[in-house]
Length: 189
Image 1: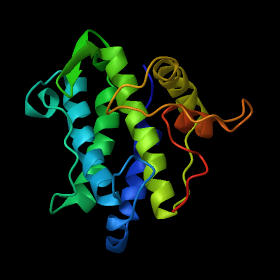
Image 2: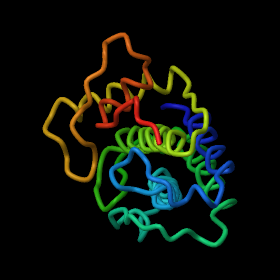
Image 3: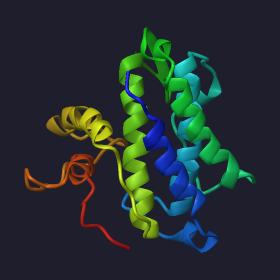
Image 4: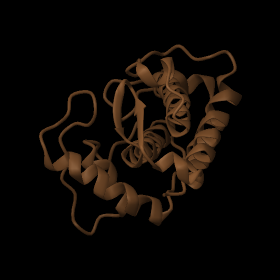
């Protein structure tokens, strides 16, 4: 079991600090605007909260949609959803058995890693796109690194990550994680 509390809280804080003018800005995440990334974070938080509780339905059975449409209350509901996701994965039973998100069944332990990776990497995307500071606890990064390494060692999975971006072996851990997902750690707006 991995504690997602700090990662989810950090990304929630990024959402709390968004200005409306930033919503149209590009992000390092393949052709997603800040609005689309924000919408994605709100949706994935709901889906992975349901996945942790094994409450399967529309949010867990459908692939993620990329849309710039934000819920009217996104400023409060999306950060709350991230915090709820962390709480849901704080239950040891969330990590047991089988779960589902995006219409894909997987061992719950893998689902937890996917959820955490999404929050960490998209948090980085959002921070870079909006010029906000971003830090992730080292223990969280150490949990995410082997997960993204597995994907980077195989052929790129369409819609998931691009090919890894080369970085030095002594690069900061967060830079190595985002580089393995196909993002350039030097990306700036």
